[in-house]
Image (cartoon, rainbow, N blue to C red; front, side):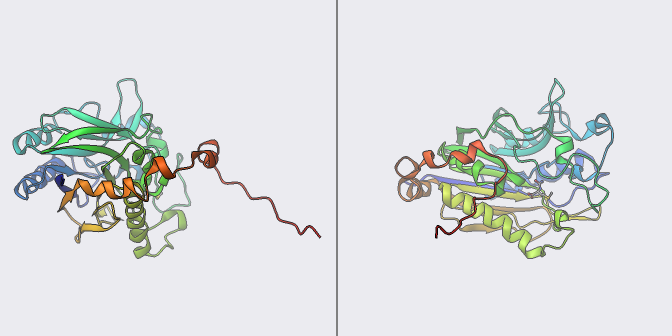
Amino acid sequence: MSRRLVLAAAQLGPIQKAEGRDVAVGRMVRLMETAHRRGAEVVVFPELALTTFFPRWYEADLAQADHWYETALPSDATAPLFAAARKYNLGFHLGYAEKTPDGHRYNTAVYVHPNGEVVLKYRKVHLPGHREYDPQRKVQHLEKRYFEVGDLGFPVVRAPIGENEVNIGMLICNDRRWPEGWRVLGLQQVELVMLGYNTPSLNMENRGFEAHHLRVAHSHLSIQAGCYQNACFAAGVAKAGDEDGHELFGHSIIVNPSGEIMAQATSWGDELIVADCDLAMCELGRTTIFDFARHRRPEAYGRITAQTGSVAPPAWTPAG
Ligand code: CDT
């Protein structure tokens, strides 16, 4: 039996440092209106969707960065998103910087039901970048300064979306490059992975020497492989374009459980892409080549959880 879900990925163009949340939220509400007109039941927004990608800006005193974080959802600034969700009967995924009442800071995503309830929350586990100001870099990437490692694992929940119950999970940006996270979601029969990202077009870890097309290729490769190997759909949704002189690549995609791209953004601005997803497609992989119960061999995977860094192998020496 087919279980159809109309899925929208709402890529956002750049948000400048000086722009307030009202600008981003206004644009997001317009995208929700478009999503509704195109029949979508759920819309996925990027990582840290409410502000510029602030981890590129160094702040010696963390308290001076407080204005980048949300302390409550909804808030006055984000209330229009919740109102639009109700008006259009549209669930939405939102990435934002979270500061908890006891002072913890996370790079967080939530899925919100059209009635305004938070159904699922995830806090980013794989934080890229560095903690201290790095004078060698042209552009800072201070996620390790501004966020703690997420403490919620990789949760999946069965949630009502439109006509269906859908097993939803989340990854955030750099997480997409780590098969471990995908597999933990796959082990919970995830059907839809919501994944927002802010990825600079230049690899500053490599002083900008990585070719632009490879940056996009690696993003797509990771998402397509994650979907195929875990028999799920994903919406990989970018913040794109030039933020105060710093370029983020777009190329948002919706991917099916065969690892195929169903829809792709072609602009560097606000853009909605939509795909009609047959959730029953997840069953093929899950019951055949990736039937985990039949084929996984966790007794051989000890290193995956016992070890962080790689170790050099023993050297082979000839017996004779
Ligand atoms: N936001 C985020 O996680 N971006 C990273 C770029 C890392 S470069 C230090 C990504 O993996 O896309």
